[in-house]
Image 1 (cartoon, one colour):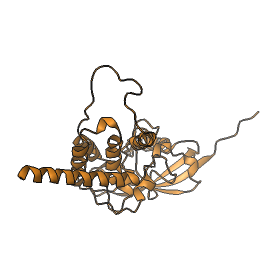
Image 2 (image 1 turned 180 degrees about the vertical axis):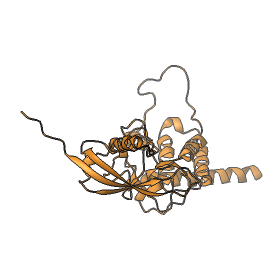
Image 3 (image 1 turned 60 degrees about the vertical axis):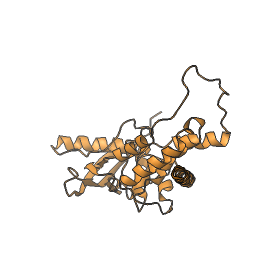
Image 4 (image 1 turned 90 degrees about the vertical axis):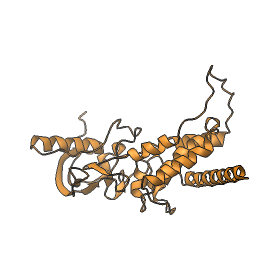
Length: 264
C-alpha cells in the first residue's frame, strides 16, 4: 500500500534581527520553503538556518534546549502570541500543521525592560534566576528518609504545589503582560514552597525577598488582566498571584509587629 505524501508548506517569515542589545534591530523578510507540516516550529527554523548558512548569511539566533516543553529555554512571540497560537503549548511543541501554505508569520523576541535582547529572538532572562536565588534555601531535617506518611500533606495543597512547580520560567507571562509584570512567575515559585511543610520555616522571609528582588529587576506592576495566565504554556492560574499577595501582606504585617515589639 502506497504511503501518503507529506504536505509541504511555503511560508513568509518576518523575523526580528538584532545583532546585540546595543543595536537598533529591524524586521527582515525570509522565505521558508518546502517545510513539512509535521515539523516542529523550531525544526522549521533549523531548516531556514541551514539555508541561510549555505548562502553565507547569519543564522537566526533563538534559545532552545530539550525541545520537549520542559526546560523553558525556548520562547518568542509568533504573530503577537507568546509561543504561538496554541494554548498550553511551548514553541518547541508547536507544529507547522497549525499554519497554512502561504501564511506570513511574524517572529519577535520577548519585549520587556528586564529581558534585554541578546541577539535576534534571544533575550537575557537571568532576572528570573536572581528572583529564585533571593528566595534562599529551605530547612529540611537530614538523616534517614522519613516514612511515606511521615509528612502528611492535604491533597488540595499537594495538587496546588505541583501545579505551581510546573512553571518552567520561560517568560511568556512577562512578554504577554502589558506591564511586563513577573507576578505569575514569582507567585508560582512562592506558592510551590509555601504550600509544602518543607517550605514553612523560611516562608515569611522568602516572599519578602523574592518580591523585593522582582521589583528591583524592573518588572512592571500587576493589574490583573489575566494575559499572563492565558499565555502560560503550563496554564498556571491567577490564584497563585492572589496567594502570594496574601503571603506578602501577612509577612509585611508580621515584620512590622516584630519591629514595633523590639522598639518597646
